[in-house]
Image (tube, rainbow, N blue to C red; front, side):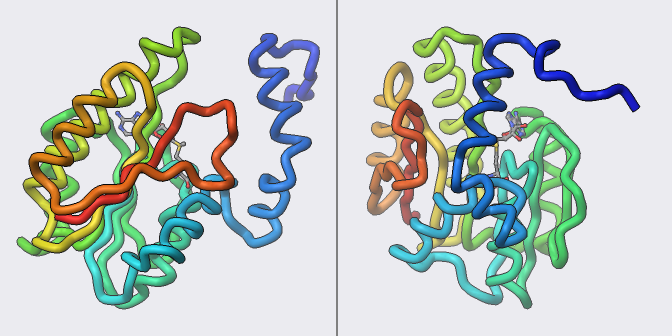
Length: 208
Ligand SMILES: C[S@@+](CC[C@H](N)C(=O)[O-])C[C@H]1O[C@@H](n2cnc3c(N)ncnc32)[C@H](O)[C@@H]1O
């Protein structure tokens, strides 16, 4: 196997690696057997709003490497859990995995098959587009996907079902705000304590 050498990495990859190695939440997640530090955002929001329960249909979009689904599948131990991502996700107990692009219609059809005609109780989405380096463009592209997730949720979420969706402050966020106000009963934009300060991400928690 080729030996890993930090000097062969690009400047941004070096920065990312240094930040990962020095981040206490990365090691804390590992200790707890979660695959990503992203887990602490879901735990914080769920502990406050308690929307993940047993016997639900839960879908996790943009789920790789899988910490959110590890957590929600444990809570929803007798229900149906499905996780999807562009990237391959290693198996998770009690969770169906789908690999594909959420923006494709055939992939969306695959996602709704496993519930045997029932709708979802919870739609989670931590989908983030790869950064282009242009913050305004990144926010616009990511909010465009968040809107697609909300349109999906409007169609496939049960009445009183919950969504937790990553959005970004900046370009395109107003469309997300308008959509949620017009179609959902309540909404909160949350910046979890574990979200990096420099990140523009804001989690939208809402109920249909
Ligand atoms: C921040 S990570 C998710 C971390 C995850 N919540 C966890 O706990 O492990 C964002 C993910 O969104 C995925 N993603 C981006 N665009 C996507 C798309 N169009 N369809 C599916 N997944 C997508 C990326 O591949 C990436 O794995």
